[in-house]
Length: 440
Image 1: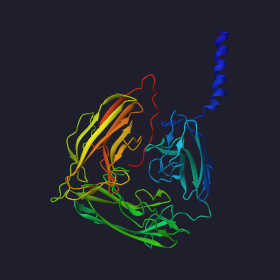
Image 2: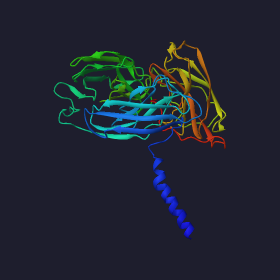
Image 3: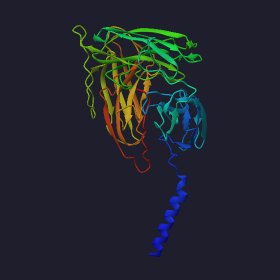
Image 4: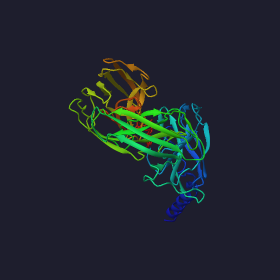
């Protein structure tokens, strides 16, 4: 009895004192990057204050890890959001770095808090085309209004026609979408004005510019139909404005949402900013393409299907569909241009395999096999995909044909095939799942 009491006391001592080093703030991502010394300061701030984020990432795997040459290591940040909306990521560095086993990246970056509300910060990176854990050990910073900064303008239309001002200091006015009742095949025109009301120049993104945020049958990042990118790289002086106007054809029946959008300093304007909804009904002249099935398949090949962009899917297969973690799967499919005009595949993304593990959303993105980037697919011509991926963790994997055309994605989870990967063998340990992928 005395010996048992002694052992219990020893165990309590170990958990109390030695266990303090096993902090929840220090963890290892599925890519083998160990997080330590993560700090955000201050955690209570006023608008206009600057926050400093620092952390260390150490390669604990047995192989080199190559950081994305496009995104690098950075601070994941959101303002008044727990999703991809109101992205405020910053501090991208160590792009393309090859991190050998045992080596580490010491990161430090600052940014000004330009809006009141709840800000979230976490260590972020991109490796092999996928993101680190979404909101990884995030730290929340509450930003209050300061007396030196006037309160934000009302969101209702004022006497000048202004609808409101974004956190970047861009005032929206004269926003119109017409018509708001339409048929498939009709065109809508979107117009608005953005005025720089800040005291400093605002540089519009040279990659994305100012554009129309658009979604079809979606209130999230799914079914992205953004269009009209203009004024790329424009330097907007205080008091200057951008007068925007763009038109697009409604190529599918359903609910369309349009709003003024832009990218500044690597982050997007407000998501669904004063959006206007347009309902498109089936036209007697232009038949609506039937939507993809709402239920996932559990294997085998799928019958042909045609996307909204006129790409016909055939010969889609995933093999095998019963695997263990560590096994490889091969995905094949063919896309044929059934329209009467050329289709230009995105230079950045091409066609690829959409993939998720333990997720039916943008979380746990495992997309792979990007190819045919920038290809101009003539009417009647086809592209064939054949790509292989190692399943690096147990769980439910989903695969589907994917592509990007004219800045928007193909159908999300298009005729997906589900593969169940059972637990790892004795010489292979399962990994914790990612929590979020890139925007879809």
